Image (cartoon, helix red, strand yellow):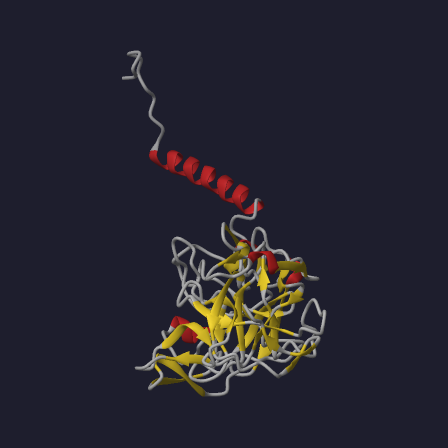
Length: 336
């Protein structure tokens, strides 16, 4: 009986099944027409997404669900990859581990699968794809590309910059590879600096620079910039060509010298005269830090100072770039 007390007429079982099957077929056809079951719904190429951060702005990360595969991993670019020259290569070398007497054999880069298989000999595994890379929300498809690298595969590029992996997602967002220094031994000797990547331009996303003082081994008080901020807070010597007015490092010198970049006016530490610190705009929309009007640079072969026991001294590097030719003339340390 029905709820109203009237008799209910039952449908024969076979007729009921046929009616249900027909209804399901109609739904399947409708979903297929909307593209739900088409192969186009699952991109074959690696997905590059944008992550909006308070400290670094909008940066590139691996697309996909966070904590599934490489989803959410930060993506980086290297200052030594310039004008088709790949400074981050596959030549085996040795680098500092837990002390100057403890080194590990490694290459700057290697295939992405090594990261997935927990192979630690590749310092910065390449982010690769098996098809045309796909832009997620906030990413410019026209800036995506690839370069083929022997033994690695097709590495994804953004605005021409090869993209690399280093550390996994973190909450809060504190990427270990941002502003990372890897210059000469005992550090991994890749001769350069690492940056997050702006999703808007493909240029470095450095955050706000911190300018501080340091004391060289000869007793000179000079300027430095904080690098490795999410790992070591290392004070790295900065330089300028006091007679030159170059506002940015040209391609001919950029394998040796990197501009001290900032996304806004720098912060200060250790008695720096803030009235002498300024910025000058770069062609990429960032700012290069200046001191008394002279643009500041980092040296690609900067040497660290080791404490007794083999630990890196976080308060100073060696300032060994003084006297080396650079943008605007011969480079000098900057008196503080």
